Image 1 (cartoon, rainbow, N blue to C red):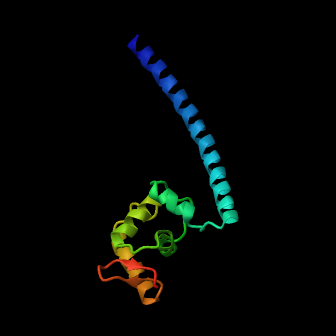
Image 2: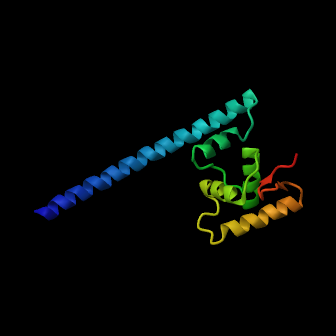
Image 3: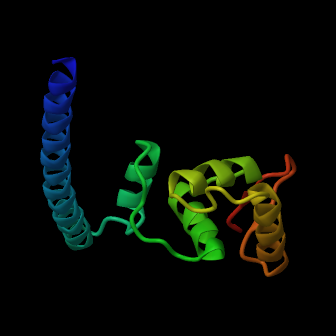
Length: 134
């Protein structure tokens, strides 16, 4: 008798799961459309292209586009417009879903930051952080 109760609960839970996944898919589609609308309106208003990315990052949401590793770091400097430490960069990359599970992410970040500094894309501050030149 208890086995039938479990089977019924299992069937109900599976059905609920499928319904919730469908709702999530519908919501994800609405969110994608709204992001496109916000970006288009932002362009018409003259807002900076990075403004929506900054909003999403500050609120702890993933940023959609998955650029390469170095381009992602460049993007972070454009978004923040302030000095970033290597650990700041790591935290934001992880929020973006980049480098998650990488064994030595911080080492890769240091390498990219050093190369960007050597190329003059960024400059090192006195406290060991990096910022855009100027």
